[in-house]
Length: 313
Image (tube, rainbow, N blue to C red; front, side, top):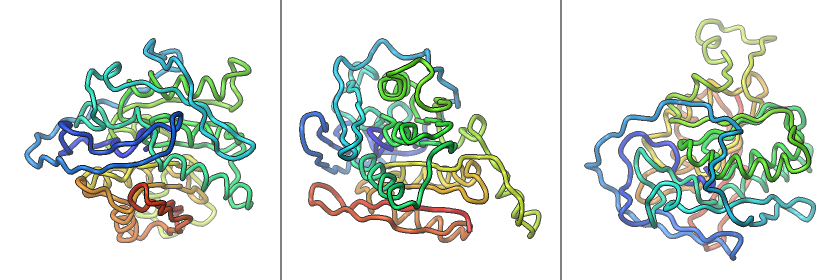
């Protein structure tokens, strides 16, 4: 999750929006810092998930950023991002999460930057090749990790967010300014944008049959299935209730064998129950994937953050 941050795909009970659950300064005007509040309303009614829909590149919203902020990945790469307010897009102020309506996608969360740094490091060390790969960014928000993949030669990039409005007002403009700045065809092979809850997204995204095959036959050698070579997600594991649907979607969409998932997030999200360790427990109990911790970030400005890599065993 990323600017899409810690609030992305919960269709069940979630914190109320009376006070910001997360707070983050914008990189265009300085350093990052998080604040955590509780404001958890266990009596909040369940909100049905929105239908999964594809959003066209041409559906860019007139509510777009008047200026662009630079995000420096390294000395050789700077990505530009817009800035829009929740008031302009959703009609709510000072809130990062409105259950069933807004899932934090208009903010740039620290995990997105951590994720891009980890990807950049793996590329430089020869552990990752993005050229020509099929890439999915879940809970994309600004879409910076997906845009990074495009700048590194990905052949196909799909961006998914809970809110279609986030895609129209932020992700698509950011993609255009970074990947389509030189020509209408862009610098990567293909892009697509999809909105909705994780429980519904397998209807539109690329899926493989690895999980089905493993349950019907013990012989998985010499079998390859379609799906995404690389799945990216930043700050998507914030809500405990959404983790099962997130993990199920990953298993359905990840290419088998050889596909890899990069996840950046906080160890714990106070007030909402999720965190990287909660997600890891789910993965380990399932036993279908192997995990590798790539990085720890403890800078004193927020809860401890981590970057992990997953792949099928």
